[in-house]
Length: 248
Image (tube, rainbow, N blue to C red; front, side):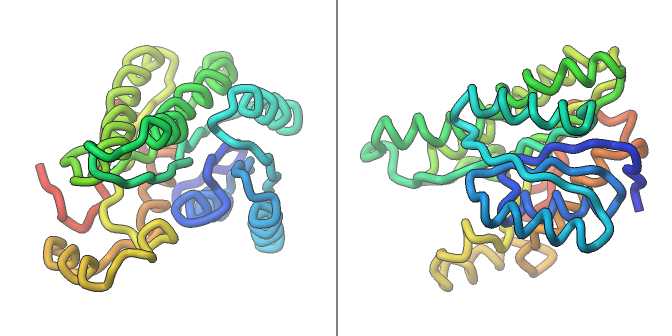
């Protein structure tokens, strides 16, 4: 197990799915976790679960498209915990539609939630990491940011943008012992994918060499590794967690 004792982590989009699994895993590995999302009730349940298991967590309600809410939440987390060691930019949405029919509002909402929020959150925590000369920034991208997907021009663009952001940040702060990496999940069983047609899921499964759909815990394991000291010589990297669906 990757020991994260004494580390403080912030996870966005933590109320469900991959974000929730990441928060639970980081807490299990010893980190104090600031969990952030829009749903107060789900966050409270998550904090209660972490605390009941012997961990330490606190909830911060925010909508990541609102810069002021991000600033206030990070300020509150820093005031409560004193520092920020790990940031997991996980918050994300989809607004799928063919490009010719896609509304500008759906483009903007996906780009602002999935990409701009990562820039804003990173900007708010980077000062603490620079000061202590240690940090781990982990951006949750997607296989569709690497290979594209029909009907998801906004989502694919936002996730591809996260990969570029990851590499740029890695170059900016590497000399301060701060790493920035991305995790690119493939087909993961979450609320976002649960509504997909069974026929689509069966066809997708045929494209996965490991012959199973991934779990949020599969992604959380990769995040825990990249958050740890064991990954200290890895930066600017995209770690694929896709069962072999995309290789190379």
